[in-house]
Image (cartoon, rainbow, N blue to C red; front, side, top):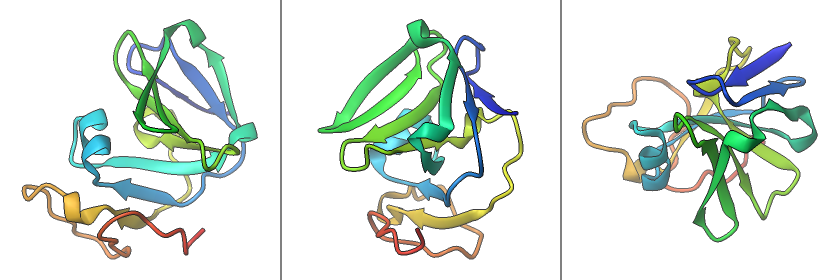
Length: 136
């Protein structure tokens, strides 16, 4: 069973099936939400994501109209994101996975907002702003 959790373990979830394309996002809001140079995430069908426990510990923040970031209210770990324009998808934050996904990064997006102290050292395409989805 492919599972994930927050740092304190109060929020746990299950993912059925394979992850979608892995993307690193360097936009300012993802950097601030992750506390790092980028957020690593993958889109999956909403029906493949099941919260096993921790609804009472899950908080939600609307970072822009229609974009909701879900995180553990106890430890602050980012769990997933939903976007109004794509109601059937969940963007899972890969740092919480309890398994090694069988996928590789496919794109860097919002690299125009990447911090100068971070250098990209791999080959996937780099998009200056929002990823256009051509690899979906």
